[in-house]
Image (cartoon, rainbow, N blue to C red):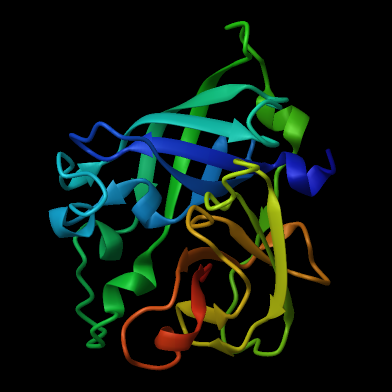
Length: 232
């Protein structure tokens, strides 16, 4: 696998109290840290998940399985890793945004991370130093606008019934950027949430984390997919 493919991770989890597995994407940004979307690690409101799993409620997600570099259903070059710690930021955790009045404000903070350990192969044998084997992406906080930059998103769409866990790359450009979000029209099916957004001319550095599909009735939200920016 290419370096950029090895460090992309498929993520499986259950909602708090839930019984079904759901999927997201992520990217290693250190030897044992996977960057992803906030809603891939924590659910602040039961109403967000009741349509997916009626038994699920708010809280930290459970039963994580993280697969760096996974390719289709059968190729797990770095095994399955478990989560030891989960992280998000306050604006997502309690959906508070005292400085921002927009009704989409909580989505501005849809950002999370997972600390991983105990990676094992299909024979239940430990795989040591997974991050050293995959490598990891850098991260770059930006300020101001970077509209019209060519972008790349790599993740694991779950609508591919014939080829589940097929790593998928989509290219577009940044259509609009605001302080905490970037908007684009890359194809981002379900389960690509948490995938890194990089730039074509800087392919191993994360500038944003894909977090949202079309949302609401206000532009640019209603006609663009969106990522949460890394900011200083």
